[in-house]
Length: 138
Image 1 (tube, one colour):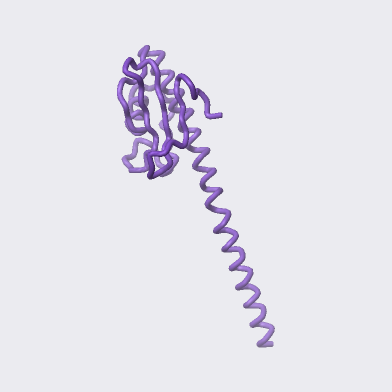
Image 2: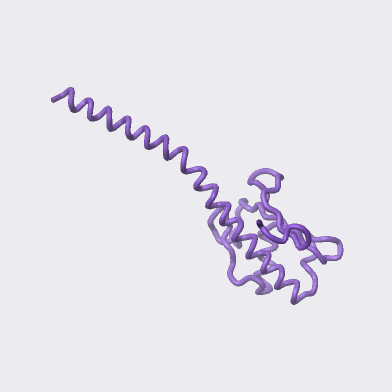
């Protein structure tokens, strides 16, 4: 009886170890894909807000900005339908946090724009949307 119980406990422990390893291998890619979908949703919402801004002002915003600054500008001017969620922190973008990898810039005449998303913690571009070459995320 004691040997049977020991074998059962060992089998259960082995199964739990296999499940933990499997989860450790599967969870990071799933979280990465979820963040990527959130980033794409953010970019499309901001792009739409920029288009509304452009229609009203006849130019794009005239200075380089972080994502937080741009979203605040678009939100204050009512160019965004809703305040987007920060895809890296999961909080509303208006909240002050350091997880802001969205960047905005324009040309000297404010006739074109470029939105870039950097890989977190780097200066390497992950996504780029602009009004000339990269108008879509596809």
